[in-house]
Length: 196
Ligand SMILES: [Fe+2]
Image 1 (tube, rainbow, N blue to C red):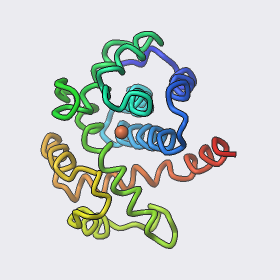
Image 2: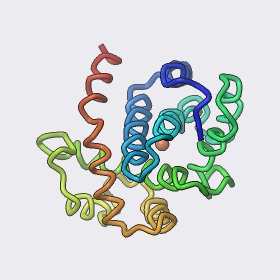
Image 3: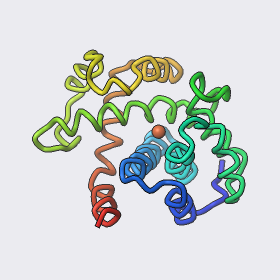
Image 4: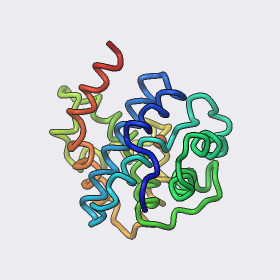
């Protein structure tokens, strides 16, 4: 699997359709997380593909929330994104806004980790450090069980995502914390520049 556009082109495309800092930050986070997972799981040669897919996965969400995953193929195709990646992007909304099932391991990781980064990110903001660097699996577990906390992050999607990967929930939590640690600093710098 190879990306048909560069990271730079993908970032430009993201910013064409996304202006809110929240969406840019989420895209950068999922990009960094996917890159970490590609390397971790032995897909280092495809790391760019994993990362660019992460960067673009919510391309249509800010402007077309009612058509999430339905509008994306049009926006992506227009910009020269390949059909493989379009499929991968649509599969992250499986069962909610898309009927494209995650099949490839990267699609399964995207499905599981996307929702979880929201929960972990929200949990990080509750900490004095505002960081995932000193976050433990146990605190994610606690937040996961507390249904009122970050209620918009679907526990069912996260659970289903772990099941599809054949991983224990704790394993998904631990890996995703590490993945978020790997990119936290570079993303906070990028966001400082973006909001400056
Ligand atoms: Fe997302």
